[in-house]
Picture 1 (cartoon, one colour):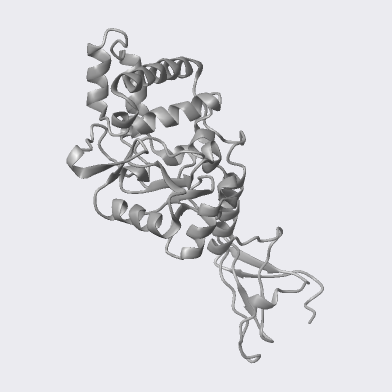
Picture 2 (picture 1 turned 180 degrees about the horizontal axis):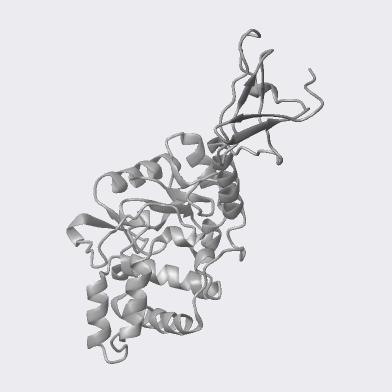
Length: 315
């Protein structure tokens, strides 16, 4: 319908509400009787609905109103996260980088951690505690104790909120000095890795019986120290980009390998076991056909981590 061709105004207590010729969005219609008198609301900082006769409402505005729903926001966030997962090994806008001084400190820390690993051996290193690492570094003359700056970096990395880096998973280990006792784990023959006794160990045995000896354990229990070593290597490989590293590997304290998860692979596949190529292996196809596997980081995960078809979810 059409309205008055000239602007009209009605005064109430000194405030004016003005309505002009124009049309009204259908969603703004309210039903009123045509016999009712016109009703106006005083002006405020927000546009006011003006109820007029003939079942119409006019809302004066000079700019289009864009309404973003919660659903729209969630959809946009989901799309943004999926893009990061798909482009996990690229430098992206908003990524967090080490400063120049932090970069140098991290490299020296990583070197000392590697020296401790070589000293204690690959298998034992998987369950080495933070305090044990410090003790070895201090008492072994070829390694040398961690400096104050190095300790600050270690603590800062562990206690930092990983969501700052784009990793949205939960914190698994809250205490930096957490210990994994030998009585809690079993060493898996031929792998150099440990699994927690009980559910994790039993499930690996079940999978190996169903799939066969081609299924191997590629990573089991990881202490905080082990996660430091893996994570810092990722950061170094990514030239100091913490966010990019966190899209490939959980920061220390956030790895589910500390609570029961483990990785599996195809015998003879080597490093391909930690790539999407693992999907083409006979082991993966048989695992998928079993219908009893839950993968921690799926292609559409909202944790900000790359797709890992080798990572078995337990916890």
